[in-house]
Image 1 (cartoon, rainbow, N blue to C red):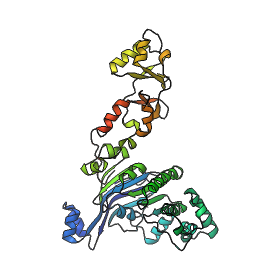
Image 2: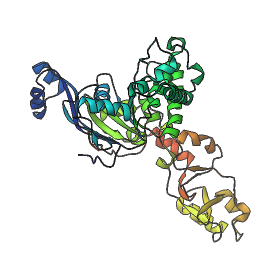
Image 3: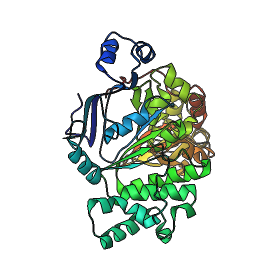
Image 4: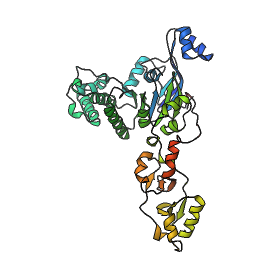
Length: 406
């Protein structure tokens, strides 16, 4: 069982079985029967089975799966729009799964907001009135409601449309209104059930980018549901892959793509552009370098021969001062210092840089220095080797992520 004190949201062994007398399904599940067999024998449908996970404060946790995998049922159980059959749900250590109806209503008003796939706006209300609706239910005064609604609309760039009818807005704008409505209540946890799937591809990408930009300021805890792997990889701090009502893998985008837990996950990730998922830290080699104050062109050549490389970074006080190439070291092999051949205009990137963003630096045909938060050399990316790694499908080995558990 996951520790409820260390996470914003914790779910333990959650089940949803649709139909009468669900205990019949549990008996068959314990015997190892699958959901299709259980449906044939009992008429009961397994929506979610034995799912456990936790979400840290400020994290975007994406649940990804095909239609019918149980992801929408799962997210609706988190705010009790669908009642769980078995299991527990906690927000800030406060139990949701067995809370009475009045307590659930209060939790929804204070801590949870939801954004749906279909915008669910009231056509007889203005944009601002739609955004303020939840605040009205809370009993907030009209003037304060309007002020909060306008602030929320400003966050999504629609404050100028506050008095428009929702029908006068484009689909992308309407979804922004839905997002503003969810944000107006200042919830701790934001549940988003395929919120962008009804939008055109270009608008959808814009909305994904806007969500990330908003998240940099808001630091909300977000559970995001999608059937689109590219969307999951773009948005998620962590991703859970769902199949037949259970999680088959939980991991970072890089882990999901590089180390799929089984053939099901591998099939999803086969055509993914890994350069948009992997960071430079995932393809870098060990930090091999020279010292500006003690090495010479001759010692640089010896080191390059030993490592079978054509260039090495040079450090001074632990930080990258530049790079020395084999040809330059050979031309000045009798010098007693590296200063005369040091190339100071060499590419340097942070560890969390996505690989595709580093591609322009590869044009220099020099090794790429990867530095940590203190700007010390953490690793080196060789442009000629990295493409071979990508074409080979990423790192070898398979880190198995326990289905339905952390």
